[in-house]
Image 1 (cartoon, rainbow, N blue to C red):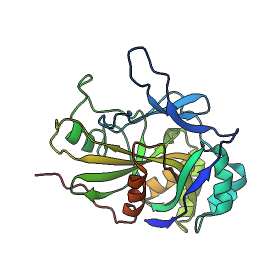
Image 2: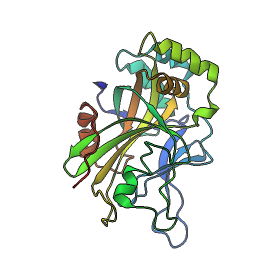
Image 3: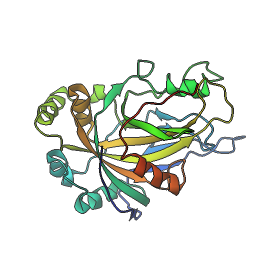
Image 4: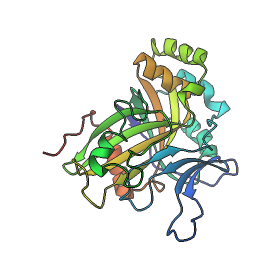
Length: 275
């Protein structure tokens, strides 16, 4: 459920920013380096390649070892946001890379997915469109459990998928804190997690699969709220997610970013495979 959309905000460069999107130095003979999400000086996630015809990717790397918390807004996030709060956004700006963002307040019902298990996007929907990796003969592998929350058609040629990607795996979470949030979520749904998000739009150059269409991947990289998200998934309860959607850092044009914001208000619906 889309609860509120905030106005586009420009975030200035901050010396304390720990998260950034960018390119790894390219190797000899390559036309571009890997597209990465960095946490400090560490490469945290390998992202969909720049070409837009390669499969959608969020692959956890060895640099993804820390969450990102803002102590001054923890009480507000724990009690939960009823709406988009300028004070919270101003505090979060200190950890974000410079750029333009659209704040979204969502209510999600996350389902925890493991690579290669039922519900895994990479071994199901993605394989149906791209087929298996030509080199490995396997599906893409995200190297992390992740959460699926929503999907819906864009039009007859495209479908949108939403993912919440933890910076550290749920096995790193403290079970006691997860239990505390599970009890809290039994009474209220307002406890709020925070993500920095991008939209990647990917379409294979060749029709090698059984269901050819454009994949829109709305990826929320979880900065704060790892215990809350796990508690919501385990209890089946809704949770609020404050997403800071980066307008310029995804594999998508600004008009597609605006379009996914409007589409996110639609109820979830599965992909209808082409006949």
